[in-house]
Length: 254
Ligand code: HPA
Image 1 (cartoon, rainbow, N blue to C red):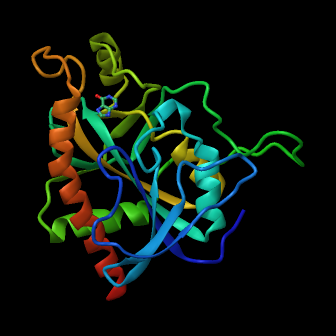
Image 2 (image 1 turned 135 degrees about the horizontal axis):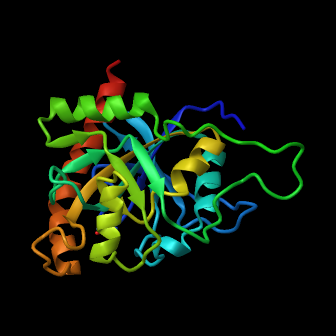
């Protein structure tokens, strides 16, 4: 499955329902063989380059992680000519350097989600296909993000293991202890199968995560509230917006 246009998409998650500086040029509704995507695609210009913005949870943030139609979303983006994705997501921090408001560009993932439509390779196939997923994220996109973060002196952790849980509930303390033993640094609910579906379609994909809270049991056993998450994300998503703008400015001058 190949794609000859060269378009970058930003997938926005919790806390990033739009890109404020985007000069919107058009919206596109895409139908897919897998059903309806979460939202129409928003095309626009940012930092001198064309970009597509896509709201993973829908425009009013109404679709929970386990009910997102990941296949329709990825298919729609690829149909529209997208060849690269920066996927923004809120996460909980597990290891000591992953405190609230820090940004992390993970380099590995472990999938603990279940029951999600997770592949395009099903039905009547000519042959069974096993995609390589040794390195789940695009190294070149990760480096672009890291470079932009350095230019802006943003506090970003380069690398880390992302755990994808099923949600929509947060984890128990024992579950987080298990994820830590497994080597996970951060935990979210939407990173899979998004990343592997992108790989199946030959679309480059990097994850830009914002730590919204200490994961369960990691903050003196205090409970986690949505108010805490929302407040931290406000600050974190400000950084994400400037980081994305910087990536696009870097592109328009190269
Ligand atoms: N766990 C899973 N997903 C999340 C969390 C968390 O603690 N915070 C934000 N998204």
